[in-house]
Image (cartoon, rainbow, N blue to C red; front, side, top):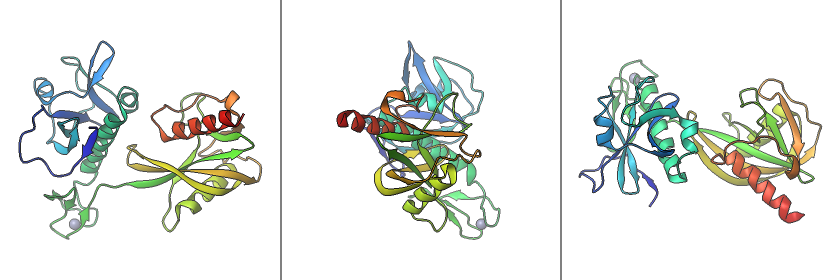
Length: 275
Ligand SMILES: [Zn+2]
């Protein structure tokens, strides 16, 4: 059945017990026993007597209604419930679980960031029937924010362009990515980012696929492109190293849940089938 996102809380109690997604800035609380991981049920969370903020209904996952709640950053480990980094959680859940966790994280971030009106500074209220916060004083309405970003795999002679940011774990390389700026089309953003970060030009920009990425609220829009001209010259700001890699000599790569890795795996499969 997977995860079905929804904004409006259900009128009736569900057939299965609700799941509670306890989220803070960096972590989610999971139930962990014998190297297996679950999202805890409502009763398992309530029995821990954590100090929790009000819940937000986010949809249903395999027939369980799902609620996101903001948690403190230092919750004690109780009854096999413990907080783990969100990125680690992504490695322990299916794609529908990752989707549910992503929605929970973004709703909690939005709830925290829009408690006061950005225009007049007065407290906002949550609107019923839609995911929105209204300022009754000036009428400004705020919806959950999404920030479009491009991510692109550039290919030259069966080698892929991979780059390293100094924010990455030691030794890891990935495809280039960057936020779309006001006034820009996605294709213009692809070209600008590649020129800015590594100094080369590309052609034949093709849509690949997309992924919601909740750090904190990106929508990653993936493209492939072919090398056109120029030599690699890193900006030493966002990017500290970049190079062309064949499928036989790939460095350490991002986790398999990321669109970056899906794009790199796609390059590998194409290269191997072309050999
Ligand atoms: Zn206002």
